[in-house]
Amino acid sequence: MNRMVLRVVLLMAAVFSLFVLAGCGNDDTPEIKDQLVKTQRAVLGDEAAEGTYSGVVRGRYETNMAFQISGRIMSRNVQLGDRVNAGDVIMVMDARDVAQQSNQGDAQVAAARAQLNLAEANLGRYRALYEQDAIPASVLDQYQTAYDAALASYENALAAAEQGHNALGYSNLIAGASGVISSISAEAGQVVAAGQTVATLTQTDELEVEVSIPENHLEDAVAGKAVSVSFWAIGKDVVTGGVIREVSPVADAVARTYKIRVSVPNPPNGLKLGMTASVVIPQSSGDDASSAAGAALAVLPLSAIYQTEDTPKVWVVDKDSMTVSLKDVTVVSTGDNKVSVKGLSSDDIVVVAGVHKLREGTRVRLSEGDN
Image (tube, rainbow, N blue to C red):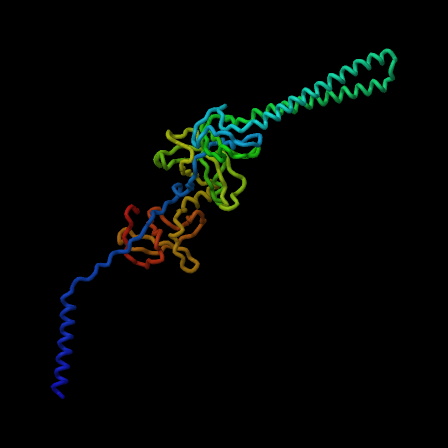
């Protein structure tokens, strides 16, 4: 029995020795890398006192073209994007019914003219009889009234015939100015009503940028204010001056933003309708106290705020130790997924993503391209 116990003890000792030797022979431990974070330098003062808004290039004058009469479209002479000149025929409508109405008007004019001639002849005869005292004045008044009525009918027929002639000319949809066909909403063979939009003509001699601005920044968008405009397709380095020409007085019912139009007096070469634009609008400056307070503001993404209880904070990276620490800030305003805060210095490096995964003193490494 003692031998059996001794063997079990020796076996257990041998197994334990194997585990110890295996552990001692593996000195490779996984290297723990510093946490990767995305950061942004706190921008203060004039650098932060501006808003950037995306927009689209539009023509100042955009005309919705429509026929003045109802009927069936016979032909469409333009394609989307075609350039046209003033006087060019855009579409042609079937004019057979209109021509018949014009002929009917001419016939009514002829009938009214015949009635007028008869009334004029009768009036002349009875005036002569009246002068000979052959008829009383009441009879002459009757024929005078008949003549006046025939004259009014004749003039009415002339006006109706002229309207028919005009309608015959309306069968051709003619461009009133030079520009580009920016939209087409009708095809040959389609029956359209008078006033129904069938195409849009955009004049390209005066281009503008249309942007939408949130209601909390509406005070920055003042008609006549100078702004900076750049275009993604041409290059962000190509910046041209613009002027706010028009501010919508009513907010969009869904987006709750206000549309503004920015005129571009000197557009860069290659600018075309529909291109994406970026408009930088300086913030309106108030009194000296407000300006001084605004100079200490920093604009950060909303994701940079680390909320602890009722105190907003941000993680700031120490450049020497590459560790993070919390710093108290005061939120001044929010909007457009951004937040304006006070309490930062111009050289602070702020973590703007993954703030809830950090702890005080955590070593970090910056994303490529971060400050």
